[in-house]
Image (cartoon, rainbow, N blue to C red; front, top):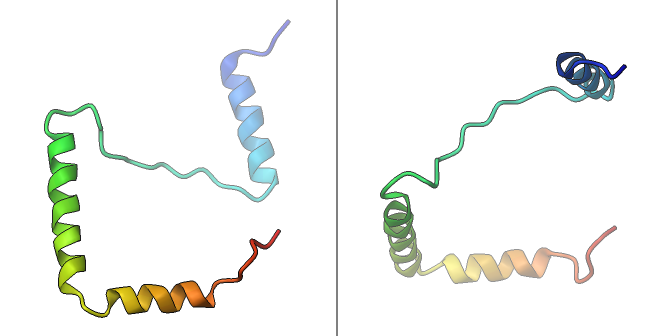
Length: 74
């Protein structure tokens, strides 16, 4: 007979803890809420405007890219 769901979940969590992992709860914005897309667009616009005003941003990003390895490391 199969284990009840609660016992399977408990067993899986114990296995994950034995691997040195711990549970973490994350709360994320609900993308189904009315106005979510509009708020995203508003924040994206603010970010774009701030980026345009930051004269040194492109140079900073170029410097960071120059420091990255040419090939992805495995």
